[in-house]
Length: 348
Image (cartoon, rainbow, N blue to C red; front, side):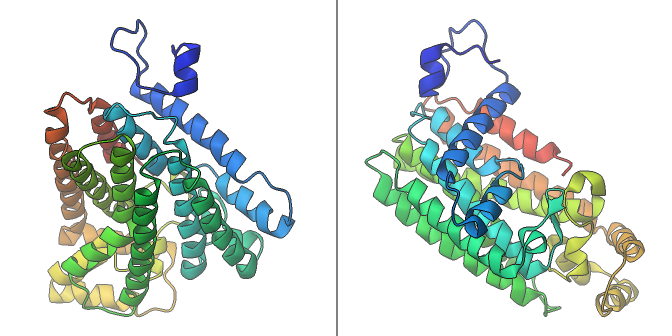
């Protein structure tokens, strides 16, 4: 249990430096996640129609890192804002994120998500589509309950980010049929599909905390860079993580011929022989587990895995450096730096 007094539990404001028992970063994350889960439960607290709310609740009860809402709250805290007042915006972002997962799973035909059956597998595609649509509507309903003079501004940013998410997903889908995707095209795609939402969280958090425009822009860069690192690392984990910890189909990206950092880099850096081997695998109708492992070995030989790890480190460094102007005004960025380490070291 955290050493917050009753007033601080209610307000969720940053702890004073004179507090005898300061919570660790892990305790703070746990507390924030608990608050987010409770608020999510309130946001989806309806029983009928069962065909709408049962899959929505199933989706939101599936666990997950809650990285995006936690990022928003940590940003608010870093600038000395009212974390409790920002809670609806944080919950809205998590609802929106889960909408993208439900629809992505349909498009990718994935059978598992977070170690459980995906919504379209447990029910059917029609139910999953409706659940995703419901999550978007609930996200906006929750966002608009934010009590802030900046609600209109963050709602506009939220809408623009949603459009960018759709653009990123469309590009991801288009790239599956192309073998000439450049690294610049790939980076542009993930900046929309993944980094945009994390950038939104940091930006919204800074706005809700009444940050200066310089602080808002610096934290936007932080969130975007964190998102880029997160996605490239996700590409790596797809074929390097322990399948039991991964929580989704092992090698899912390569089976679907997705243009991840790994495949884009390998196709451009491979020798003619290595490239032909890769193309032989990609031309097959289905790729089994043993073939995924052989492709992973090819990536290792080409130098792709080491380059992906280096790219993750570069984006983590950009994110950390972006906090410098925040620190110059005596804001506490320790938790935001701890979040970078957490993402950097994740195994699933």
